[in-house]
Amino acid sequence: MNVLRNMAILAFLALPLATLLQPDACAAEMKKATSIDELATMYDSSGCKTCHEGIYNEWEQSIHSRSIFGTGRTAATIKTTVSVGLTGWLYSGVKKPEDVQVRHLMICAKCHLPQLAEATDDVAKEIVKNAYIYTDPKASDEARDKAVAQLSKVNIGCLICHQRNAITHKWVDGFPEKDTVYGFKDGPHADAAHPKMKQSRIMDESILCGQCHGLGPNLELENPSQCATLYASYNMAYRAEGGQEKCQECHMKKSKLGHNMQSYRDPGMAKAAVDFKVEALGYQWRDGARMVPQALVKVEMINRAGHGIPDG
Amino acid sequence: MPIPLQLGRGDKMGRGPYEKSGILRDSSLPPNRPVNESFEIPFPAEFAKQDGKDVTTILDHDMTIEVELMYLPFGTKESGQFTWQKVTRKVSIEKGGV
Image (cartoon, rainbow over all chains, first blue to last red; front, side):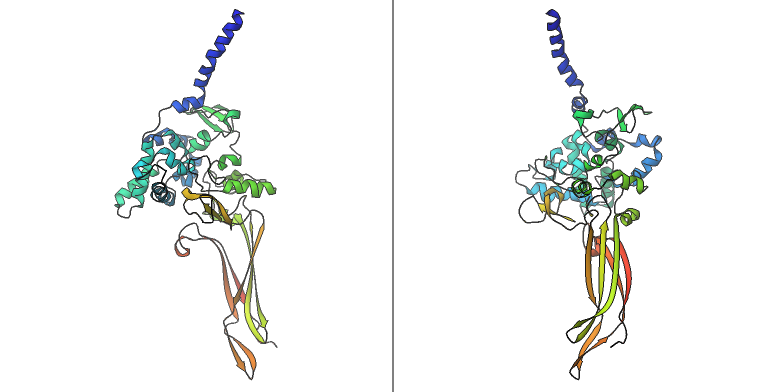
């Protein structure tokens, strides 16, 4: 009886201990970044370049490497999200740019900078401040360059896909661990900061990309936003109709772009995405007694991508 | 392209991602389904009556047609368009005939 009682006590004590040791609980207790610089350090991928130089160079050419600045349009849209959206809505709690908190900016950051969830509101304010400077026509070139440089420090780097977002079903596969990089194999990893390597079950699955390249409105947010509807199109219009390929097969492998994942801006991707056939015929249409010379142009387009075009 | 519905209600298009929540209509090219378009383009010609009959004078019997598939992610056609595909065709109208 005593043995049973002791086991029960041990189990009772072990449960909260196990909860404390859950990686998500540890992550929640981690110190949050208080500046863009700190957040950049927290997700610094520059060390990956030592061994994966080719891949790193590919990634540097991708839009992922400047996901919060983008081509400039992303930074400008962050500004209008605040100036047109947040400050214009009665119940947002944002009267001026300085009022923006992480929860407000997750409208954009859910995909453009998901690690913002691990930062304080100071980082959200810093991003907004720099987006305003970048779009201010009165800002000096020097100030604008500084803003661009600051916004370009944070991005969808290696550790987003290969750690933070490498596991979608955390109750099934466990929570991503900070000392681990996720890829196709289990084993040691020659990096002091990330000495472990584990298999991610979704590394070559479309759902990895679908976390950001969207289903449509992000209804889990207090005030939903919507950029991309691509993963919805992939599921409902491509896979549902018998399409077999995954995002990585076209955007990384067949295109030979690797980690420089591009879409229409790459000439090869643009060409491969759409069959474009044009036939033209000259003839004279008889409109009563009048002959009317005209050309008939027939265009057939077949989208060979695994999703609607365009989308994002 | 997917034309977003403002705040997921009513009949207005949303513009910024912060106000989009749904699709109003979709003009994108769906995967693996042919989309056909046809265009009729008049040749330059003059039309007149001679002795009570309609007479057509074709000013140019040859036409070069450029067909361009464009994507306009942002801005105007002049500033922001992206040419996806471009095809040139030459078309001729027969000279003479009955």
